[in-house]
Image 1: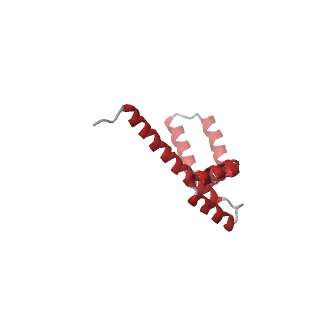
Image 2: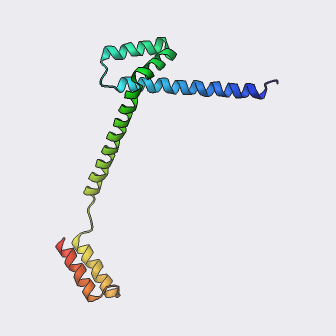
Image 3: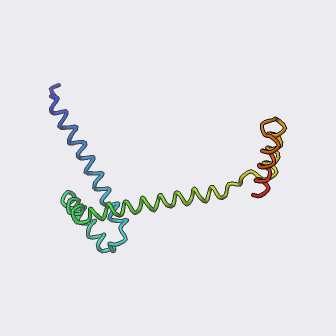
Amino acid sequence: MNYPLLDIFLTTMWFFLWVLWIFLLVRVFMDLFRDPDIGGWGKAGWAVFLILLPFLGVFVYLIARGKGMAERQAKEMAAAEDDFRARVRDAAKDQPGPDTGEQLARLVELKNHGDLTDEEYQKAKSKVLAA
């Protein structure tokens, strides 16, 4: 088998460039159909352009709308982060804390075990009852 090292390198390079281009084409289509600023006919026109002349279509789309792609992506990521934080806050609110009886029982146990002095016990007990 006669397949020199340079041919292997070039084949690998072309393969990765092809995968990169497919990824870029998918990314452009995702951005195109997620963009609320473009109407239906505009999306259809861009889609036809991207399908009929894919290389030229991707380059023209990136030149014409590339900055907007980054802004829309950043906005989507910020919205997802805010949604995640809101869900975590809601989940934390729904979790019940230890009730007063459990806290007092724990304090009595610590006092009886000798871990708390009478003064520390009274301060902690007043904090629990105030809450």
